[in-house]
Image (cartoon, rainbow, N blue to C red; front, side, top):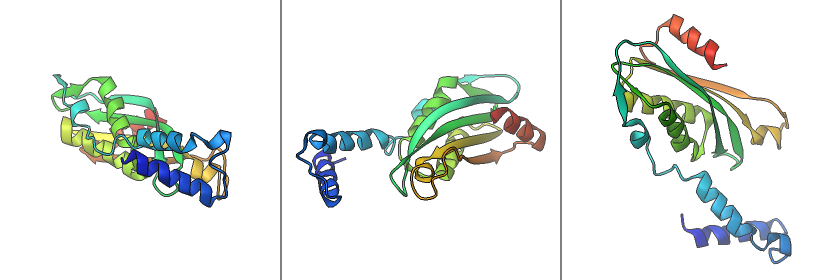
Length: 181
């Protein structure tokens, strides 16, 4: 990110809104906004490979579910936050990953300008690519401030997406979805 260019852009934006950027409350706002968006998008250049590369051998293939992984992201349509929780269920094929690594995978993809549908899919594909499980299911429930604070203003509304990849039998899928909710 070009920090100085971002700061100038925020200054120009505030002035376009008719704001006096020299007033006390706005003096440091352009810098704060630029720094915030640098943090919101710090996952742009990352992959989940490092987080998912340390695996452990296992026997059997019982389903593993990590749920209630809280996240926040930024909607690419309005540059407003959306936030919620993600559950990841997978059926291992001889290897598993440490549970904290699943949360790290979520962080990589949520720290981008994002769509919820893409976020869900990227996490599922990363787990398939780096863990090679028999199957994976990623479930995401999020509240979008672009729906709750502007436009239709429907506070409390949530969007649910999920993605299934690989061999994830119907009975396991139903069990995983029941556990994820």
